[in-house]
Length: 153
Image (cartoon, rainbow, N blue to C red; front, side, top):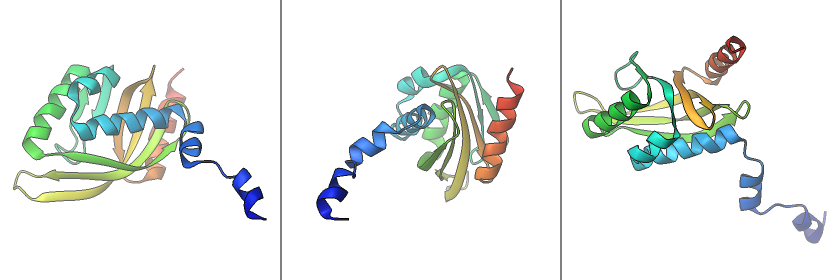
C-alpha cells in the first residue's frame, strides 16, 4: 500500500483514543486522575453515595462504605502512608464496568516503600463510582463484575 493510501486510513492519535472510548473507561480514567492529584473534593463529586471500596494494600480486608467514609479514608491514608494508585490498562466490559490493571505504592507501618501490581474491578452507576474491588488477576476481576451483573435484576 502506498503512503498516501495508508495516510488516508490512519487516524490521528487523539481521534483514535477519544472516539472509541467506552464510558466506563472514561470514568475510570477520571477517577484515577483525581486520585493521583489528591483532589478529594472533586473525588467526592464522582463517587456514588453508596460506594463500596474493598482494600488490599492498606488495611487489607477492610471495606469502606459510603461517600463520606470513602473521602475520610483517602484523606487520612494519603497523609499517613503517601498512598499512590496508578492505572496502566483499562479493559471495559460495558458502559458501567471496567477492569483496570496498574500498581499501588505506599509506605507501610514500618516505613518500607511497597510497590505491588494490582487489578481492580470497577463498577459505575449513573456516572459515579459504585464499587472498587481488588482482584488477583483480570479473570477474577471479570468474575466479580459478572457475578454482580447477574445478581442485579
